[in-house]
Length: 324
Image (cartoon, helix red, strand yellow):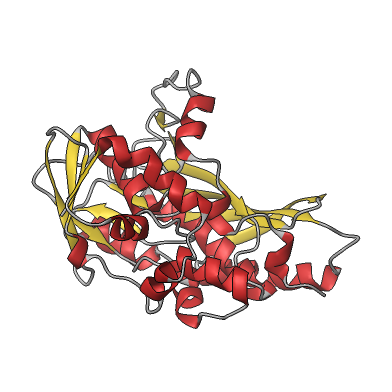
């Protein structure tokens, strides 16, 4: 049997519709029509949030993608952690999830799908999140993910439009899984450090951010650090400054970049933000900063103990993003 990633035209969050194209598609569908909808489409945040009462808001999201690794169990774990991350990125706690599956049933054995679902189940159990079934279709390309519902305190949300000038920027996972996953897809090399990063829940990072008083955050996934930071800074009316030397990377990421394992999604991410970016670093550094992540960390406006500060926010200047 061929490798699992060979059945996918792209891998993980790198197979997202490009951010600029997506914004054009949903333009005109934004606008809060009910004040109970605290977070909708307007700023492209990580999940939708609806207030139920003074103390409770419902957080809901869906996320699925094509295989990012060849090991079916690991793919299930990665996809589940990635879907749950959207709830953590809003300051919420996941409560229940349903599986979303596309499977080429005449091509890939059902036992392999069992392994994918087992991986998702194990990560959901780690998150204390129930799995209540799901939906599957016969699909020529394998896909897996989850629709997740969580709860949050409506007065303590982490939003992408609440960042303020003067705050530091904290990143809770290293970058580099995009180029490493692309190398894995091309060569079959396995990178345990990338898998370990992708399956790690953002639960502790979210709780630490809330404890530190943060009110603005997003998770770093398919649009890369630059893309997600651009959305946060644009929505908040500030300029974001990245200290490139302070950004952590997984071992092997720079080697993978040097050897040309850059996805089309990463290149599209950089093209999208370039008109809004002023940079004092070379193009290779920018490609790493735009690397399309799968199940990346949280990017928090504020200092979160135990995690590296990679920049800060300023009053809006002549560019939305600056890299130095």
